[in-house]
Image (tube, rainbow over all chains, first blue to last red; front, side, top):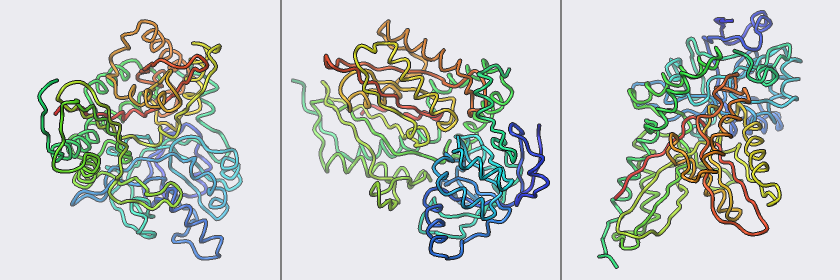
Length: 184
Length: 283
C-alpha cells in the first residue's frame, strides 16, 4: 500500500503503517550514523543533553558525499542499520519514533520498536543519487568535526521508503524469507 | 629482455585520480548490461520497483555528476607492472595515494577512511588506499581502480574448509555468506569467490573476481558450471532486490581459483553490492 506521511511522526499514522507499505516521507529528519551514535551514547552516559530532541523524530542512517556548489547535498542513500543496533533501544525509549536505513535489526531493536510504538523504514541501498533529489535542505547541527558523520537536519520531500518493521513487530525481511521467492 | 620504458609516477597519479571519479559516477558497460537483463527478468512488484529506481539512480549519477552511492568506498588499486618499466620522479605508492586524494577531492567523493581501526579519526582525504602490485612481463602498466563500499564488504566471509568437504562444502559456504548478507549487502549483489591458495590469497582471489567482466564466465569448465549453479541457487533464495523479495538477488557469481595445500580448501566470499565499480586503464 502506498502512503504519504509526515516527519516528525504522529502516533496515529505510525499505528496505521504495516510492514511492506511503501511510503513517501515529507518533513524533517536527522542524520546520524556510527560515530554520532557513539557520541550520543557518551552524552547520555554523562548526563549531558543530546544535540537533538528525539521525541517523535526520525533518524536517517546516512553519511552523504560532499555537495556540489548550489546543491543541498551530495549522494545520500541509507547505510546498514545493524551497526546502530547497540545504541538504538535506548534512543527509542527516549522518544525516537522512526529510523530509515537498510538491512536487518536485532530482536532487541524489534522489541524496542514495539514497546515504543515506533517504525523502521528501509530506503533503497545504493540509490544515493536518486534519493538526494528528495532532500531539499541540509544543515549540520552537531558534531561537525565528524565530517560526513556529523548530525544533519534534513528537509525531505516525498522521500521513498518501505516499512520493514511496523509497530506491531511485523518484519518484511522475515516475511520475504518465509515466502522464499513465491511472492510473485 | 625488452627495452626499459621510463614512466613518471605523475602519470599514475593522474590516471588514478580520473579513474576514482569515473568509477564512482559511471558503472562499467558489463554491469549496465547485467542490470538491464535483471530488470527484464524480475517479477516481484517491490523488486521491480527497486531495480527501476536503481536504473534511474544510474542515469541521475551520470547526468548530474553525483556519485552513484554515497559510500564511494575505500579505493582498492591493482597495479600490474611490466618488469621492463622504470618509474621515475617519485615513489609509486605515494603517487597512487596522491591520485586517490585528488580524485576524492575533485570528484566530490565521500572521505570514508579512518587513520586507525580503533581510534577512528577520519583522514579527510580517503587515503590511504589498498594497493596490490604484481610484476608481469612487458613494459606496460595495467591499472584497475575498484572503490569498495563497506555495506557489502562487512558481509564478506572466509571459510577454511577441509578437503573432504569438496565442492558441496564450497557451495554451502557461498550460500551461507549470501543468506547472512541478505538485505544488508544492498542486493542485487555481485558475488566474488576465491577458492584455493592460502588464507590471504583466497581473499585476494575473491576481490579480483569482483573486477572480472560480470557478463563472462570462467574459462575453466567446472568453474563456469559452478558459477552458473550458484547464481541460480542464490536467485532461488527469494531475497530479491533490496531484500524486499524477488528473483534477482545476485547479478553474477565470479569465481577465481588457485592451487592450494594438500591439507586445505580455503574459500573466500567477497560480496559486492550492485554498485560493483571498476575502472581499468593501461599505461
